[in-house]
Length: 375
Image 1: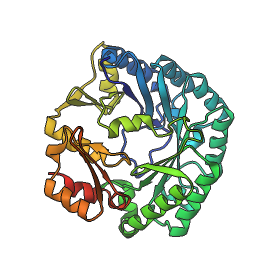
Image 2 (image 1 turned 180 degrees about the vertical axis):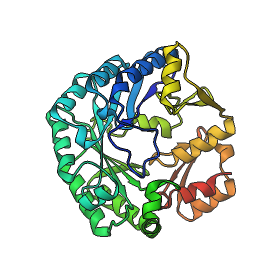
Image 3 (image 1 turned 45 degrees about the horizontal axis):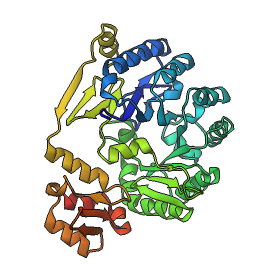
Image 4 (image 1 turned 45 degrees about the vertical axis):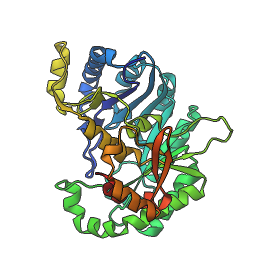
């Protein structure tokens, strides 16, 4: 069966643009939500042949997908292909019992809830609308609607955050018992108003990032979560053949699988070519309204580039990476050195070639080890 098995759908609308955000987002514009969904579905029809007959994952991201006008959101979700995993991102302040029921009725079976923090002063710094109790209410609304696969996003390295703040955030998240946690270092891009306002404090926090990362890993693995990717943790199945609670959509990215992205700013990677849709709403809607594909930038992906990406992304996982097709991307001397230092495990087999994985210590050093390995 040919075709991409993974679909990303971008809903860019937000009530407010947080200062640290660099995603393709649009504030408000409720009058344009319906027209944008029309354009999204038109793009999906044009590109349907690029998808496999059976799609494995659908991920609706943003923006704040759950800020989208409910009728437009329901129309979109009902028109998406069926998939084993269908995820929608949500901000806590948008999650009402009605919204949770809408998602459930439209076949969504996984929700990624953007908590970011449970500390009021840190939420204020991040310019988040939700308060700690808003996050908890949203979580329980989703539980009440029948969701048994909820992911929480947390951010650390926030200006003003202390080690005790991080402990409190982890305590609050663990008390809810989500199936999945994504814990990210705060990345404020140069030139954003957030960097302008908090530049000095961000520099101070940079020195604490390594310690915070180690605390996150220690706390979550100690609570029984599997540290399956650099910033991602999931509960282990309670039964021998229980569900795999890793983000299957993101695993596809990390394993170098083809995927189709639709919407403004969406990226697709299929058959050795990557393209990015225009981030501008007007030309996107105009093109699709005329039956044409939206303006795009195309980038060919030579084998060497794909091999390097496969190495960089694959080593973020806790599973061995097969070097077939990627061996030219690895510096053999660096690999031997990292193995001697106890940062990389290498499993060699005459029948299937070599598999490599970072050791726990190597994973804590993360990108630095991977950079050393790249030829």
